[in-house]
Image (tube, rainbow, N blue to C red; front, side):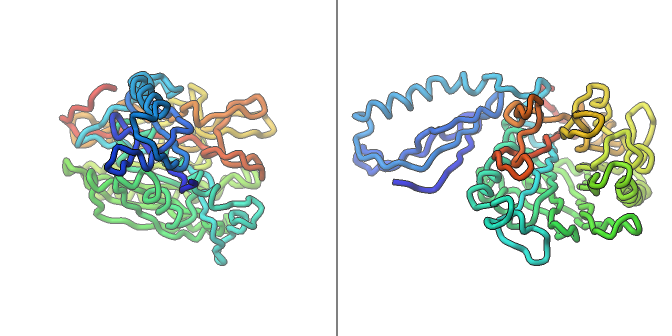
Length: 420
């Protein structure tokens, strides 16, 4: 019979398949492996199952089913340790009690299918220009769930920053309607004044973090625009080791209308963020500030380099942009084409305060920030490697996002962080 679509995430020896019996040696329900997306190395395998099929034969007499399961089990170690096109600097090892993996991901228009009369979301409805059906919505949600699990490896990320999420319904579907539910994430989200209805949000695991405060800072663009933009989401957290983290999730105004014409809007957003970070710095002591987001500008642009004054470690500034080294490597998180040609751009970034670089005291950065440019998130489009997104124009191609996720690891001083 035809049942619901199921997606099961298997992590390092978790249940291979949910096979139910009738007590008389007969299989009554068994998932059939229809597709396997090997989205991890060192332990993570992401299995995608088609609907359950009813089977009414003794399990040992159904040699075909038994043989398939036996072969799958025999080759599981090879699948677990295969190099599946993951970044060379990717480490799937668990971080332990005092290690925190933080990721940020622009999930590209994660709208639910319902029309909100107060927002410009008509395109993303079943009758809209995008033909945004329940199937397409849940397909995207399940894909994004797999990306988050893949970034985590053996242990899911403790903090997940997101942008381009329409509302709490979409967030609930992602964190409570997929395999992520078992990790018991909690969601922080405020409805922003953005006219399209795309917000920033934060999800965290209470097993590792406690929220002390949360607030949405309105980004008033003043005379630079009459169109409202997204808030800056602030969260103050405490780790298991007693360290305090100040998290700021951003999604600055786009380059719509041209980079130069739209630049004042991002400079304005930067000045508001600078005011927040200055206030935190002025509290005194070591303030652990972690800024993440899609800034729609690159690290060397005015808004980030001059207004926010976030530079590389050699500059001696209070705020350090961890993505600066990628400028030299010519890597990016977003691919775009303009009059001067097509190129990768570093729009998604982590910026930290100087105390988070001190490995001798308190919580600190381990190694560097990473771009999760796994092969399954990349596609060949018109002869160019680009993020595998949901749409090309208005044509649905069923990908993940037009951005690549980024991640970084934090550890408490004295903790054993495991392999690099």
